[in-house]
Amino acid sequence: MAMALPANVTGSEDYSADETLKRIEKLVGNRGNWESHWQEVAERVLPSYSRSFTGHGITQAQGEKRTELMYDATAALSLIKFGAVMESILCPRSSRWHRIMPMDKAILQNRAARDWFEDTTNKLFAYRYSPRANFASQKQENYLQVGAFGTGPFFTDRFFGKPGLRYKSCSLSDIYFTMDHQGILDEVYRHVPMTARQAVARWGQKLPDAIVQSSMKEPDREYIFWHCVKPRDDRDPQRLDYKGMVYSSHYISVQGRKTVEEGGYNSMPYQISRHTVASGETYGRGPAMLVLPNIKVLNEQKKTVLKQGHRVTDPVLLAHDDGVLDSFSLKNGAINFGGVNADGRPLVHPLPTGNLSIAKEMMGEERAIIKDAFLLSLFEILVEDRRDMTATEVLHRAQEKGLLLAPTMGRQHTEDLGPQIEREVDVLAQQGLLLPMPEYLRGTDGEYKVEYDSPLSRFARAEEASGFLELADFSIKAAAETQNPAMLDWLDFDAAIPEIADLKAVPVRWIKTLAAVQAIREGRNAAQEQAQLIEALPGIAGLAKAQQGALVR
Image (cartoon, rainbow, N blue to C red; front, side, top):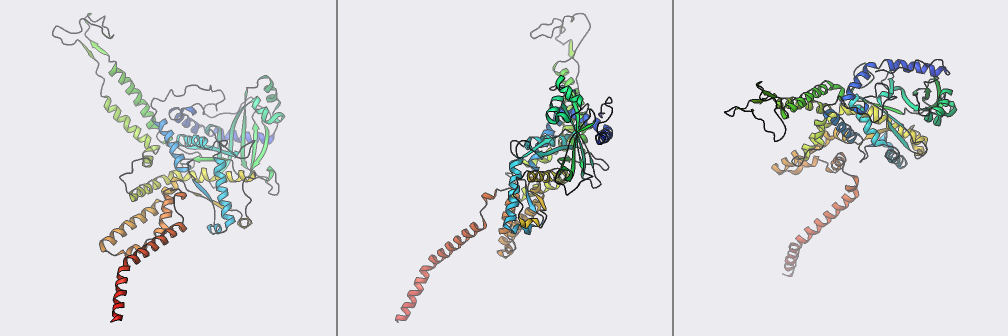
């Protein structure tokens, strides 16, 4: 249900605010089909959002029940697992899932540059996972929206009050956005309801008089504001204030149609994560939208099975109308005279109820389809028992998983995590929390790239390790059969082992350094030489004795 701006608000105190609100009205009006679709999904898959698209939360009662249409929880539980696995393979909180690297890796030969990139990466993880940042919980909420609605808006900004970062997963019902001609996020409009008291605490006398007066009489009355972020048309790069920033930022009050705050950003603070995008569409489509018919069918099947189950456990009784069974009792221990004839044949029979096993089988098929849409059958590879699998088989399975996940998850790097990291670097730099860029890097304009080291990226690189291990197995077997170890000379284990360890996420501290490995080899060679010398000593002594005897003769 599309939301219209209040019709009783007339006049304008700010021409630019009035034009922006007209732009928002158009975007709101164009999204009716999407919101109707999202509402159906929310009612059956993500009930906490089931009222979000019918009024933007202004009049909703907190704590109300929202699961009236959800008879089966398969889709809702699958969505929770989908969000958890998305986090675990893209940005697991227990590991360093990316690094900041220069575009030209030759730059890392400079010690100052290498230290700067390493320190920047460390700072990102330190501030991102600070308790004040709230990243992990908000990212999980974001992935739930991606799975349910196909689109998950995320907001990354500085922490007000203390240095650091702060994150917020925005409700899709509150976000309207557009893309430019290159498919890059361009404009974002966010619906922000506030009470009169909250608005006055933030903006004070900048607000329309009606809201200021309301804060004294009705402090809890809600008003609508919009946060508008878009490229600045009148940017002056020479200016150091918000007029020189790449993006403009405005907070507009619908009451009075007035701009109450103006600012800017050097980087887009919003990230829009989409699951899949159909041609010609702006908003994404998620797994829940794809299998919505199956979810509806499963709900109807569940209702039918519940009714049928009641009939089986508390059956309808069929009896002959002879007046004898009028006082028939179903209480425990009751005795009903006349329920059988003189030969003991029952005169009361339960109504046939059909075959529940067929219904359960049909429900099982729908559940399998729903789980497969949320990639749960694919994710089982992560937790299955691998005790009977060789290392090569494990890597083969990881390679297959990487191929299957790459198209679906790769979009998260380009639309979500990549822009988020860029925003984080910008915010930390603005607060002076990063080390000054070395002079050596200034000549490269500080260009960098994000090198992902998440489980997903390791799956994609599994093909190299799998191929090496296959070649090693073949070479070892062939060398053993032919008694010719020369073919093993082609394999560089010293180069392969560290990279395979990195692929398998083995902590660096568990792997010896090259110097330590060389020391072990030198010690081993020295020991072997000493053992050979000791073994040869009796022969050498005998030879010397024979030579000495020959000289005496």
